[in-house]
Length: 103
Image (cartoon, rainbow, N blue to C red):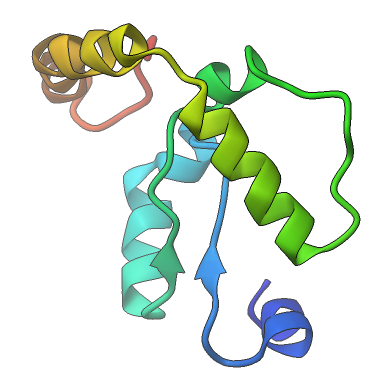
């Protein structure tokens, strides 16, 4: 990933993934921190999937604009539900000893 990212965007880039469990696992997080890779903080994949748009971005600016529009159209209640669910999510992580959870 790093060689491709550097080739496409230079040394200063922010990595983006879809927040799927395999991408947010502790090992992956530790690796990203060790390699000092900045990760884009954004809503979980399921939130974004519900808001897919028909237009396909053709470049980085169009992608940025598309993501901005999608995020702006997420209802406040979705964010509130995510915040409210954090205690349950954290408890599930603790009980699973940092293994994957239903979340």
